[in-house]
Length: 97
Image: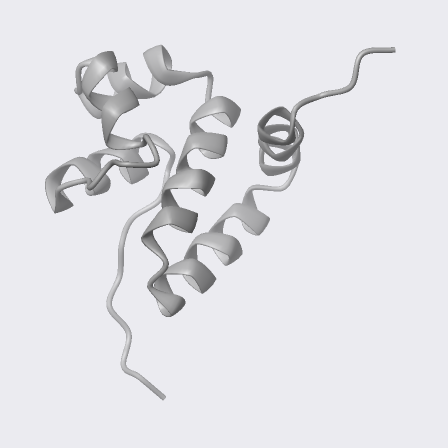
């Protein structure tokens, strides 16, 4: 039996439980860990059909999306909001409690 990669396993988990993805992203945004955010966005990209499908929905070039979500990526706000929108999510501002 071939084991799944961590990315594939997480993509399957997010696909089966989208609310978990929202919780994870919100927790990451609260902590401000960009590397962790990019990792989760790569996993979500897999869950939403892969780079080609998400790039098409986000109106981005697949190569641009791949580079944006790479460990060295630094997505512009416009790209980040387009990627999240393609996944049915959006950024929101909330008061600090």
